[in-house]
Length: 357
Image 1: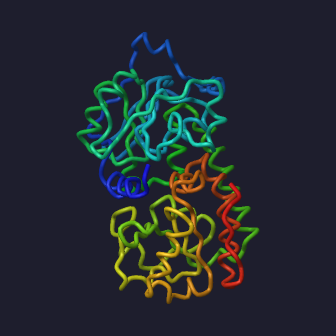
Image 2: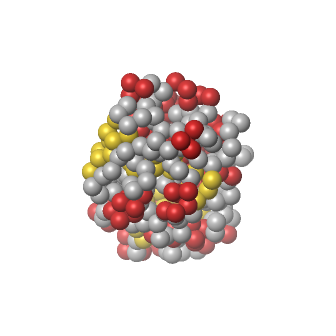
């Protein structure tokens, strides 16, 4: 998917479109067809019947799941990774990045095992494909990392329980930890989900311990989309930085408002003059040259002292950064942490190398 298209989906999708909820409906389906074509992987057999029924609160009320789901459709744009990590394979996923069979990235491929890849659904900005989702006969629809509208939630709830985005965060603002744990509850695997979260948090802790210079340093995540677009504190990309010990710019959320990110004027380029800037760019050559041709930006210390990190947006690495899930984060940390360590020393002579793969 072209960068402009993808980021416009981010700015449109990740701020308003997708699914919603309202007054709730939460009965699982008992259709006998659920027994055929089930995409539960062998690792999923450990779910406990004692976990059900389970009720999960969200932006539009709450949803009760009466029994262990077997036919799961993910409308949330990154929810499939948590499902896979917990040992189940969705029958349907929603495409965001494009280019991956079943909308499953390379960091999650081993979790697919021998199961068939999910059917990939589209959301072009008008919401989920309700009829196609219904045709998959789901017994659970996950929209945790989403921007569901109430009308969309109600439409989907007519044929399956829907778990929508949490109400305490901006749309597309749920932390990966809560996303994983909520999906774990929905699948009857709450303890397994907590273990997965603890494992990834241990990776962050190890990186912070190995790089004490991260703690207290300031950083920002940005992209040159229609000018200069910076990500707010509730965006998963920014959370990568804060979880590694970095502090985000003091006025960042004041400028962003209640969105996941926003374009800034040159008068607010002070938000970019941090100890480290992480740029998600179309490419690491011409896009970087274009950034540096801006005299206002080029005059900032972050540029003069070589404290920039560049991530190619359409690479597997760039895709993993944008997704920031329980499965993609370890993949990201292996690549991002060395780059941040090279950038934060403030020496222009220290090269911030691109990952080998």
